[in-house]
Image 1 (cartoon, rainbow, N blue to C red):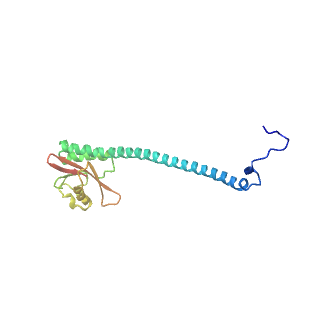
Image 2: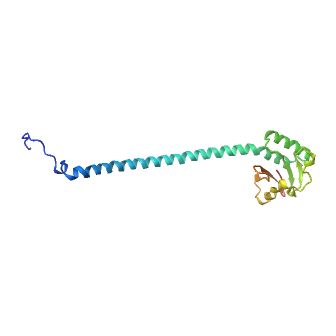
Length: 188
């Protein structure tokens, strides 16, 4: 064991303040070490934030999709019910159709006019009260206001189909009626 002669302890040569490694390189290395750790922490935090945003966006998207589906289901349920009533024979005449259409329009006032079109494209029921604008007996695709219904034949028989109306901002909603021998017409 070395004897302590009272002189101060001598630091290792690389740790001496006059050594270039101690004055310049060591502080630079410590700075780079802390900068690397800081960059790694920042990157890992960013990755975590991005992952959280993706997860939360997915949850919001699913909730929004369920709400929209529920809302649309509620909006189209009366049309579907009316289509089933027509197909089952509960609604079998223009007066019964008009009564059913009034019931639907009282529930959902956005449905301004409902028509019942047979497979030949002739209107057999109209909810409009004005006698001069009644469409009964008219080939519906020849009426300019209802001409988008020509496109309905190009689509597969979906339960409810939305077509753009000739008037901007409005749509035609079509419920297809299918019988035993194929399409039996539509409600629009």
